[in-house]
Length: 117
Picture 1 (spheres, one colour):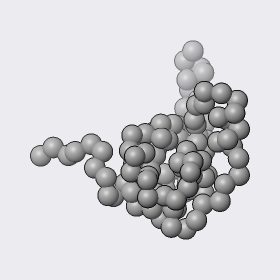
Picture 2 (spheres, one colour):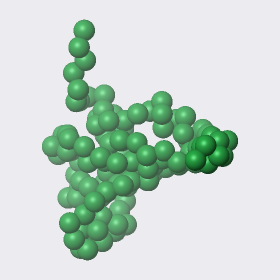
Picture 3 (cartoon, rainbow, N blue to C red):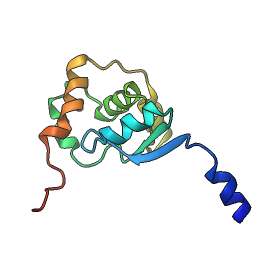
Picture 4 (cartoon, rainbow, N blue to C red):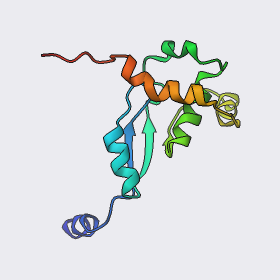
């Protein structure tokens, strides 16, 4: 076991799985990973706050979040309840610049976890 641990310690990190959503953007960590060729896999991508997406003029909020993540070079991890749900999430979608900018900035507008003094 010690030999395996030593071997792994000498390897470079190739991927990082992080909690990431429009409402929980972790810019410093994402920038670091992208600059160091570390792939990012995001979970909890639909984290609380989807009610704030009503301004987006698309019927399928899940697909637009997936498209937004892919444009940011982040690989989304998401579950689905049926084959149809999976196929719907994987359909090609075009995201307009206004929707993209809205998702980029929504984290600054919404306080998900209030700071305590």
